[in-house]
Image: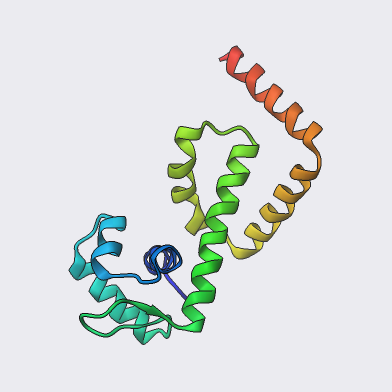
Length: 141
């Protein structure tokens, strides 16, 4: 079972591979604002856990297990962003809020949020009412 830290690294590695075709230790370190040595240590751990293949001085290569899980982590992040936007969370708060909650939700909770996001996309009137209610509450504060 991946820890929240492992998830953050896997998510970044996946994103770099999808965007650039390769994930380098230095790129992941910069994205996570950590030292390259921290990325190397985590890459070695992820290698032992079967999520990636780590070879010194080469790019980080995800295994099939790592690729699937990285994709799932990115999807979780995107869904939480969508959910917070739909319910009217201010844009400047969304990234921080997602980072704060994404590791604390079960995958079952994520499945229910996915269902809710899909339902709200199909019911724009509900979303409109929700946003109006949010605006009224902001005026009352």
